[in-house]
Amino acid sequence: MDNKVTKKRINDHLEYDWYKYLIILVLGIVLFYFAFSQINRTRDYEDVNIFVSCYEADDNRFTDRVLEDMTRQNYENARYGEAVLREISFETQDPLGKEYSTLFQTHGMVSSDVLILGKSLLESMGAGFLVLTDEILNDYILPGLTADGNPDGAALGINDLQYHYVKREDGTELRTGIKVSGFSNLPFKTDWRSVEQYKEQYSEVEENEQPDDEFYLVINTSSVNIGGFGKKAKKANRQTFYVVNRFIKYYRVRV
Image (tube, rainbow, N blue to C red; front, side, top):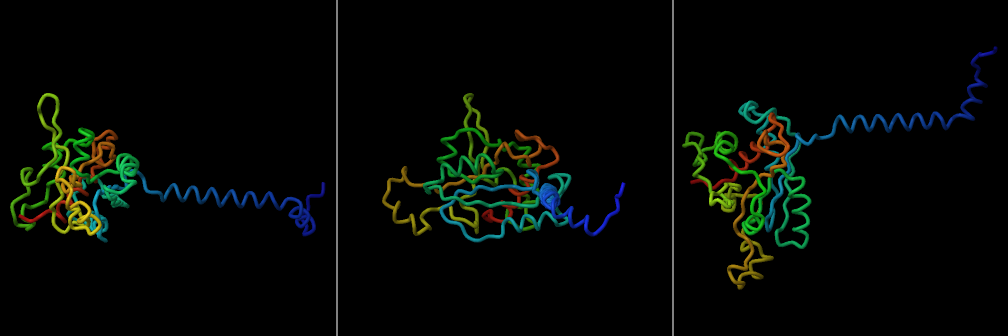
């Protein structure tokens, strides 16, 4: 049997079977791209999403600053878990916008770890967010923070912040939100009176019908980065608490 490879045989083979090699080449490229995208994609525990209700947003470096802080030696792996965060998204939405309700339900409640919401919305929802127990505040949110922002000042305590509470049927109250309206140098506006679009539109409206000017930071119980405290417990990952810790550090009003 003549199995000799000749130039003519190669040319004849390629002339009739070239499409097979093209298919193999395309499949190889597709498989390589798929494998690379899977290896390089951001896992759910490698990002924290923040949904912010505000009347106007400014450019800010909050997310960059947090990621930079995570690379510093003072980041406590034992407290918050390994510094695995690759992305922090910071989405701002106008609570008076036409699409706000839809975006809140889809982006806010479904995919966000931290939310900043107006008081009226929180009161209409009742429960639904992480209860900020003394353990969570003392062990994860407040460590390393000082009451006056000075590294040598007194440690920031639970009573140095204001909160949103949910009242239970038995009369007890659950702490679910940290008041952030009034924090200094926020990268967004929580007071509609400081925004041209609204300050005339609502200035003559009855006070009980005016938009919110009181906003609270809450944590989604579906976050995978709040250790064993949420619905999707990953005990080694508590980076969401660190993001909240940094938010308070950067923007809290100095007393």
